[in-house]
Length: 456
Image 1 (cartoon, rainbow, N blue to C red):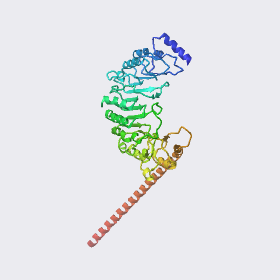
Image 2: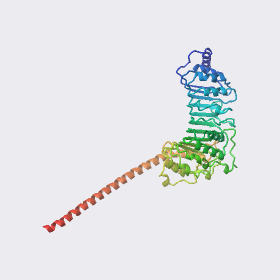
Image 3: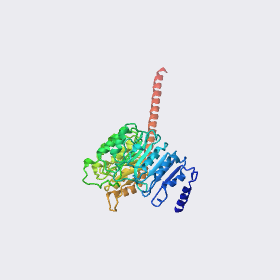
Image 4: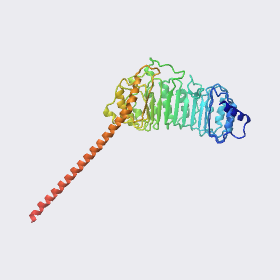
């Protein structure tokens, strides 16, 4: 690596008149602590008008100079994808970076770190008309997404342009809702991911849900989440009042979005009022993925879906591929109910903190009737090695493939028997019809004979 760095330093120092790789379309530069000695400005040897995608990730130990961003629009004027991951702000490069973005009119995707700068100064509809994917998040030294204690410094108002189709933000729900409200119903968003650094209240969850439903009529994907590793997320409070739990009814406004294909809600505490799921079941005709906080804490039987929800989901969303819910084993449907429905397209079932409560065999039999072969089951694994009720899922997972094959064989056998029975009934019906026809013909012949005899 050191030899390659030395070669690139030499090439950059002498500034060749032509780009080093003139046919290069995509460039990714991920600086780590080990590679931090290589200047970011040396990327200029790869820059040319044909470059379309540029991804940069650097550690906080690296100094970013404004000159690099000042030159970028002239060196790569046709960029369509620009990604810059950096864990530090307030280093004096922000203004140059924002000017750089405004100077790249063909950008379609932009991924930026959060700034203490009004985002309205970054993106304007008359400058970036092709922009359809925007992410403003907080990154660590490794370039991965992180969630600091607070992101209230991110000023969002008036920043979401009408052309945006996909939006991903690390920000409080209240700020995201305010930004969307400013735009009215002019947004064309099809995907929105909001990851909050705090435990959001039911009020702010409902406010954001209502705002998305009213401003993003064509929305197809909604993720409302948080990151448990954030410094602002407290430990689970066993005395946390139930009235402060987010309710399924707080999400009611989003059930109006009939184009939804991917819906995810993640919160520290379990959802309540899950029995009021009928409105959701009557919505989302094209749903492919549904995750309703399967790993929420402080769960009780009242805060869990029953296993009947699987049967209702199979009827409401026959094409669903990913399902994640917290269930209670208190009520398990009967065999007669189970055989009426199936989740034949389901690829992943996330049961989170669902406890099997020593009902491994019953649950395995239930799932074998409604799941297709190859469906993956995932659940929360405890951090320690102490036995918990979640360990029962290992037994369910072990039993399930054999039971699914058994259920499939039984369904095939029953189908063949039904076919034979129908064929037998059809043959009997045809025989009875033939006998009836012959009987009628014989009766007609006898009647003719009786009518002819007097004439003789």
